[in-house]
Every structure is written in C-alpha cells, then in structure tokens.
Image (cartoon, rainbow, N blue to C red):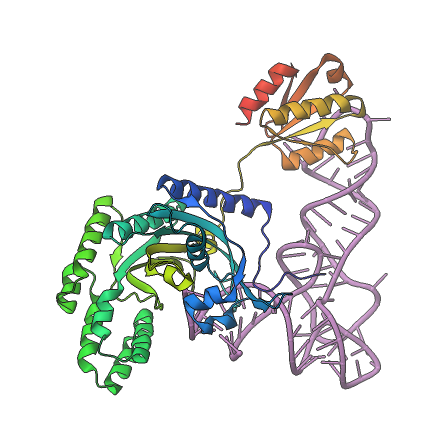
Length: 409
RNA sequence: GCCAGGGUAGGGUAGUGGUUAUCCUAGGGGACUGUGGAUCCCUUGACCCGGGUUCGAAUCUCGGCCCUGGCCCCA
C-alpha cells in the first residue's frame, strides 16, 4: 500500500464540500470589496522567495533543481508571487490594484495540529496605496472574511514604527532578538537580554509598550512620532466600521519587510498553532524589479479556520436514486436525464442489481427513490418514494419532475 | 532538528511468547427476479516496514516510516 506523504491530507466528499462552502463565502466577500482573484504557479524560481524572506528559509522549502538545472521551489506562501505577477504584468494598471488569491502552499516542517506540509491560504493584496484608509480597508476585509466563516477570533492591530522608534539605539542583530522575545511575550528573557547590553531604560519602555492597549497609553510611551497620526486615523476608521479589535503595539511579525501597520488574528481550540491570519503594509515590488510600490495585504490560514470550525453538518443537498427493472431501464435513462436537467442530483444503478438491492442502496444514499418498471414505462409515469417517510405515489412524468424538483430544493 | 504517546481488516477493537488472531461495524452476494432500513446465511478483509532474540514474535528488543500532541521555527 502506498502511504500519503507526510504532512499531507486527503479530503473525502463531506469535508471537501465543507471546504468549498467556506472558500466560496470568502470569495464572495472579497468580491464585494472589489477584489478580483488571481492565480500564480505552484512553483517559482527559488530566488523569488529568498529575495523576500532570506536564504534561511530554503531549508524549510520544497526546493529542488529541475531537469534544466534551474533552482525552483514549491511556493511556501503567495504574497511574493502575487507581487511578482504585479511587477510582470500589471505595473501600469490604474492604482490601487485589489487582488485576492486562494491556493495551496508547501513548507517542509514538522507536522502538528493546524500545521501541515501542504496547506491552503486565502489572501488579499492592495497594491499602490499608502494611507490609513488603505490599511483600514484591508483589515476590514480580513475581519469580514473571518467573520463570514462563523469562527470566533481575536483581531490584533499594531504599528511597527512605534517599536522601531524605541529600538533604534540598538544594533541590527540585537533588534531582531528583542523583537522575537517581544513577539513571544517573554518578558523575563527580554529583561535578561537588555540588562546584559545595558539598556535598562529601554526595558521599561518596552514593557510599558507591550502592556499598552489604548492610543493614549501607547503615545505616552513613544511620545511624538510622525506615524501617530496614521494610527489615530486607522483606529477611527476601524471604530466607525464597528469591528472588534485589540491594539497591540508589540506585534512584530518577525519580518523585516513590513513597513507600518501590522495585524494578526487568533482563534480558540487550535493548540499551539492558533494564529489564523497575518498581514500588514509592506514594500516588496522593488525587490522584483518594479517601482517601490507601497502595498498592504494578509493571508488567512485556511486549514486552521477549518479546524476551528470543527465538524460541520454534511451537505444537505438531497439526492434521488432512480431504481428500475430491466423492462423499465430505457425509460429510466430518459427520466434520469430529465431530472438532472431540472437540477436534481440523480443517480442510476450501474451494477445490474435487483430492484430490491437497488432500493437497499437508495435508502443509504438518497432522500428519494424513483421506481420505474414495466408498468411505469408503458404509461410514461414514475413512482416517487420518500425514503424517510416511506410514502410513495405514481405520477405522470411532467408532473412528477415538477414535484421532485420543488420537493428537493 | 528535539521530546512524549501511539500504529491489529475500510472504521472501531480484543489479544503481555504457543492451534486457523477476537468481536462490533462496514462492503459484496443470497434467502427475496416490483420496493429499502429488520432478521438469518454465505463471503471479502488486518498484526506499519525491516533486522535481532527465541523451538516459536502481533506480543520482547533495535532501527526506520507514519499518526497525534508539544518544543523550536513560523515567510
């Protein structure tokens, strides 16, 4: 027997239908905001991803040399590819550009709850705008996408300029370490690190910042800063939209290319991998040969959303099985075509089983059985049996199709 | 890369060194060639892989693979 590759999953029909339904709701919502779907290759030149995220990520990617000797990689995320697409094809399109995507990505990591080697992301990018209104739109879209799924989540919004301001006296490498500690909320580790480097005052500021969840508290720590206005405006826009969010100036997203506003969302019941959304404003296009275009975007961990949703009711779409005797078979074929054309999910026997066995099968998979034997075929009528209630009636074909159609909607 | 716990028919399980590996469920067929769920009968189907110990291994042991969760990382 061949095993499924590690960290991958198979999806059976019930689960696939649930995934498609959620995905469809997200698409609908994104379109309402004027975003249009794009699709990029599942593998790209390796350099695309190392330009964005550094050489260090190669060990966690499905990277390989193809038969022409080119270094390529299965995509570990989609933002870089979407920005590459923008630079290649849409540089001169009217700004701003609103795009969304849904696709699978691959990372070579140790699987655990909510973490797989093949996983799906739903994301959006707003390219060519650098205002609080742009930040607000993207955050609202992210919020509405998550809301449309019905999960409970905690949305946190921050701004990297605040922390950069405080950390500016530090050398580059220390800055990165401090941000990692803050992201983990490891205040003890932070304290140890900063006192070693003789930055005691900074520790007080950072502690205060990580505990600040209102604009006043934040500005009390950071003082006057050119980006304060941006944050004030963003908050007033988010408040006007009436969404729930928490200000969290300690978000650092572990990334160097984010430029300003950053946001994340978390859900319950996911164990260690509880982050379901990450995003912010960034500049990437110039890395791929474009202008230095400001952008803002996010990605939703689709699989984690599905885990957070839990098991849903299987699809309620009702089905019909057409059961026939040999004498009714040709007419039954005709009837099945009519039903399908009318939009009814219709199955017919393909095993040559007895009528009794066909009915036994129908009772397991369908809500209604349509029975066609010699008598029905001669009169061009069909017998409809409601399998849950056990009632049946024989009707002329036209009338029966109408009946079934309305009965199964 | 590290740690813990796991792996017996499609699903769920019993089985701590000894006949032909247990039971439930599911699938196929039949009793029943125009009517399902009940019942009965027949049937399909498993010890994750490999080495070792042993007269004998599902069982003990080692390695690997995979699963679940945690750490690390998280673009």
